[in-house]
Image (cartoon, rainbow, N blue to C red):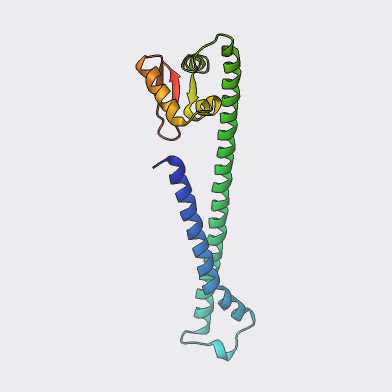
Length: 172
C-alpha cells in the first residue's frame, strides 16, 4: 500500500466521521434547541425535573457544537497542509524535470545513448526520480525500471527505494 493511498484513505475516513457527527448533531440537538428557544411551557415538561432536562441537553448540545467546530477546523487544516505539500512536491518535480531537460540538451551534442545520458544526468544531479526520467525521455516507467536494472548491474548508479514516494536513481 502506497503512502498516498494511506493518506487519502485517512482523509476520507476523517471527512466521513466529521460529516456523520454533523448529521447526528443536527438530528439530535437542533430541534431541541429550537423548542427551548421558544420558551418553557407545561407541555414540554417530562419525567425529569425541568432544570435537569434543560441543563443536560444544553450541555451536550454545546459540547457537540464545540467538537464540530474543532473537527471541521482540523479537517480544513489537514487539507490545507496536504495541498501545500502537494504543491511543493509538484514544484520540486517541475524543477527536476526542467534541469533534466537542460542536461539532455547539453548531452545531445555528444551523441550519447539514452542510458549514457541518464548516467551522466544522475552524476550531475545526484538523484532523479523514475517519473522524471520517464517524462523527459517520453517512455513508460517500466522501461525506466529496466534501464535502472541495467545501470545498477553495471554499478553505474544505484536505485533508491524510499519508504514513501517513488524510486529514484542516485549516484554510486
